[in-house]
Image (cartoon, rainbow, N blue to C red; front, top):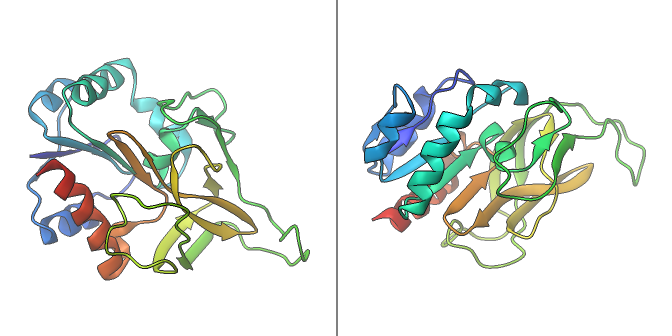
Length: 204
């Protein structure tokens, strides 16, 4: 069973449907103790980074326990940003800290051309893949995925996919058993399902 953590940061219905489409059995833990039986943990999320404040020490310890037991963690959108040290959107809220660096707001203008950019960044964008990764097996470079975000993670040691909107940012990261995607795989058609299926395959 995959634990889909509900910390009040968005609608889990579409994520649950996408996971069902790739054959995952999913439950929503009522509290950190319920993670003890999870074979994998997903932290989704949309909106403000401050919502991750709900993921306090009890949740962090429970997730770390799962990682130490060899069970993987996947962050989606704000869930990916939470894997980093934090975000300038809510400077007083620490991230999980698996990945180094702070998430920051996307620019209002393209630094190269000066062209105005609408923030949040909403819509389809392409992926570049600087190195092979488990998450993107069977996904071609240049594949389109769906984003909706105002803040983004910097390029990091574990970055396995990037995208660009004024600046280049981390679209996906892998650090051992920890993975994250800035885009919404549940809204990214067959490519998104392939990514979720690849993650699930690592558990099976």
